[in-house]
Length: 201
Image (cartoon, rainbow, N blue to C red):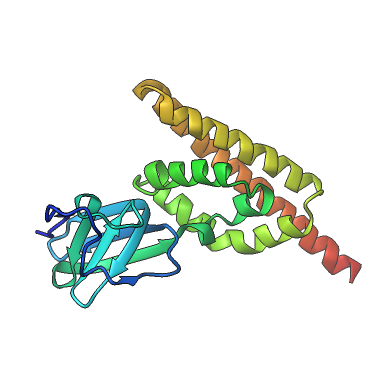
């Protein structure tokens, strides 16, 4: 089994966690052990040394809140930068509060589920050019509609965090549906803009 929780009794960062992975911002981390165990961490900081990865929600990597994955025990490690995957949200409503709420729903509900995981994968594959179009035409009808949807989804995601199990489940279904609708509207607007630009040229 992977040695997960580090607790050596000290309050400082783990002494071996010397090299940050990426740019020091939070990541989505998926770890699969050679035994087939799968562990996911959203909004986490990552460090590594020659023998292990260190994952923590605290950028100071306190031992009591740091999980250690020894490389010899791992089959695969996937580390994704959060901000780079929120293309459409960043393009139409870049407020950090909105981004944080939707990232929380994505990583806490969509990514772990069999239905949500492929939706996220499709979104991350197709959304960069769509986001570029939205950012280039912020006053276009599509951008305004998507912006309203994004902000409504963020409000629902924040409400979901405080809700009971039944309401949480209902809001998860609603948010997933709005997620699909928002991407579809954004994609349609992107295609319409591309066609108009081609005709204009």
